[in-house]
Length: 115
Image (cartoon, rainbow, N blue to C red; front, side, top):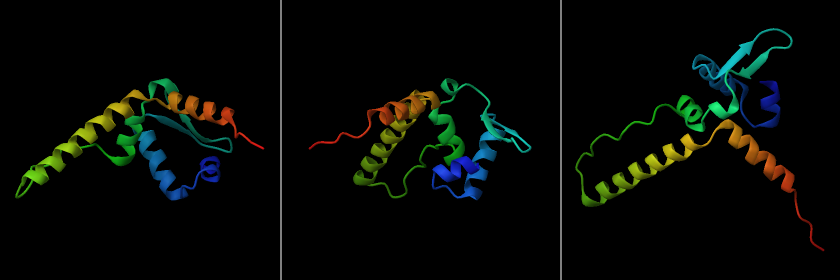
């Protein structure tokens, strides 16, 4: 946890809650002791971003029927539903391994300096 909090601006208490949720769901394992910490319970290519987002943010529920529906409200509601479906598809198609590979590729690109 300390390694994550030094690299990312995440409050330690919030990170504890996230890691506890991930542990309960079986995505990470915790080890106690001086060399303790958290490790992935499955291979990175087996864990989708959808799993992680669902655990952290909660299950995406279908919207309830609109009260006093108007044409405009229905249109906006339908667009949000389409956006939700697209979001789920995208997150399902990416794994932790994909995320790490994309990060590494961008780090290797490095900055370009022009004179």
